[in-house]
Image (cartoon, rainbow, N blue to C red; front, side, top):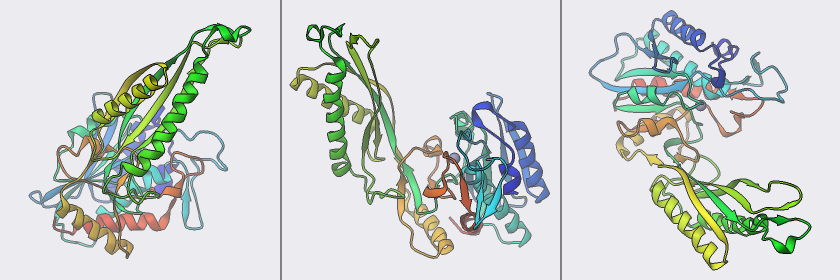
Length: 375
Ligand SMILES: [Zn+2]
């Protein structure tokens, strides 16, 4: 089934084969005796909702969140991204990990529960969104109601219960434009910007050591830190002009415990203070900010963590994501936990994407066990 789904190109930016994929998901679900419906949103994007017939309607409603669209394959693959194949326990192709393997894991889990006549302790719904990678599924996610959301769109190195927030700023550094044959007549804005960039780099290193979440990241960081990077620089208008302006884009990733708006102000003030001290002509603009989040309900987190630990057979950390996830569209209405097949080395969004078939089995067993667990 995973090969079949991967072989259909559902590139998000083109809404490619969205209808076809939604229809196939409904068909596959019905073939497995599950109940499935297609729901098309105001933007015209079809999403699919799958449930288990005979599930206890009064039990806690658990929504498993996945998506069928994929990021563009891009260039440089060693094989056709839409001709999936299995080698050394891995299935290769665009969407193999992100996110089609998680759809298959959940569908098969639902199916096996039915086949084996297992007693359901929750009322499960599998939501398969379209347009997730372009952010267009936000409206659909905001219609979902339940008692717990399980986002199957991260890795299985830990149980993840939150995500980082973000702040974007643009720093405009001004100089004095002049003919480059007479550089002494101007002030080079690029040289001025270099001072600011070095300051940003220094401060970023400081944040990584001092602004720490109580939670670890799934990988790399023992405690998730606030991160900051200069991500874009633009300046100069012609080869023979001393540039009068240079713009620096700054991307900050906040920890879940902090308020992104306050961080935007803190970083903005910090940059302005630096400008004043160094007599730089500079302006800071906050472009956007969004808060990180985490699930505070420890009881539900512990229950889910135990289920995952039974499946992987070892203790798991409770972490928060380095990036953002769709949990932000659900956390205001219900606790959110995250688990899935997107292990760090699977090249999701990169070239030569693959999924470990053992992870596919882990996520299937995780879903299946969760369905038989009282919350
Ligand atoms: Zn994804």
